[in-house]
Amino acid sequence: MKRPFFILAIFLSILIPIFRFFVKEDRFITGHISNFVSNAPRQLAIKGRIIDRPFYQYAYFKKAQIFTVSPTLAKASKVWFPAYGNIRVTSYSDKELKYGDEILFEAKVKTPSSEKEDSFGYRRYLERTGIFAIATISERAPLIITGRKASLFKSFAYDSKNLLKRNIENLFKAPERYLLLAVLLGERQDISQEWRDIFIKTQTMHLLAISGLHIGIIASIILFSIGLFGIPQNFKYAITIFLLIFYAFMVGAMPSVVRATVMGVVILSSYFLKREADIYNSLGLAATVILLFNPDQLFDYGFILSFVSVLSIIYLTPGINRAFRIYRIKRDTHVGKSIYYFSNLASASFAVWLGLFPITINFFNLISPISVLINILAIPLLFIIIAFSIPALIFHAAIPFLGIIFAEATEFFIATLLLSLRLFLKIPLAYLEAKSISLYKVILYYIILIIIFEFNRFKYYLLNRIS
Image (tube, rainbow, N blue to C red; front, side, top):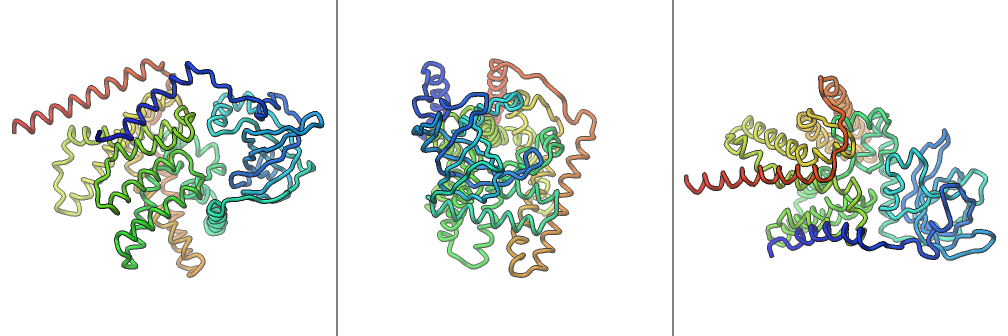
């Protein structure tokens, strides 16, 4: 079997929906937090541990700390009960909290089911990430830190993220720093709704979500930097693998990050072991790891967009290159190499557009014909932004004036990217609103797409055999 993990991932993708359809899973057994709450807020006392990195956000014009608590006890009607099922907490208390803190608090707790939240599938999204209730701690509500129990590795990763975030906030100006926080640390909460709409309408939201593109850029920068010190190849790959895993934990190990990191580790390991990595098998391994840990991720739009986009690139791009005869471009000059690079980039962008076409219609009710052109400019700009921002952060501490130079260059390229997206949106028919399409039409679309590309590949195979 050439691609066992790819086949296993397909098997799990079929098995999980069948299991969900025929087997009614009762997750809300005795002690589950959902048994204590409803749509109406209920005052509860909770004892538990913070399991992620708290971050600050303004809510209702007040500064609040957002974090996730894994409860052990819940007090209702003056009686303590064992409890489990994670809670997303918004705290207006001035007490600063950290990952691993064991806390006792009183809060208004409810299920995430307001009208606004439901319109975005917020409740289903939280349940897929293991969160079944939301809580609000008021400014005067009791909040006591009773202890601390934290993984040293995760604590160091979160502390590193806090340090990087402070340096970004000190070194870069708004609004450029908000994009940089999203691109480097996965923190998108400060990006305005106006800019979110622009990224959605141009189908460039993938620039803001840490994924294979970002991991690939960061891995390239790490390999290049380590190579400057003359470190042997095997050690270079081993160090890069460790740093990628550390980075995945630091930014929160979202599905797109896990997928990209697993694929990156597999490819780098193949260089380390001097074996050729199969890209389909690497993608299948990443999907298998995520689905085995959390099968509900199969229904998450981030998971779907991430894997379908990568699958589109590796499956559709070669066919597009053959159709437009990109492989015939001469690459013996710098101009030829540049034309070849941007032609491949256009092919990959078109492949993603084709692969995600019905999905973006259903998720965003939009079609963006110009997204193929936008990505030809946006992806190189993203590489430059990351490539300049990392030395800016490094030199900021040791050689401040160099840090400022790199920071100003980074801000210039971020401003160029944002301006370009605005200008592209002014093109007539830059985006079109569309109604969602049924599942059977989506399946039919992919069947037709596969038939077209398989026929194209078979035709070129016959022509090569004849010639």
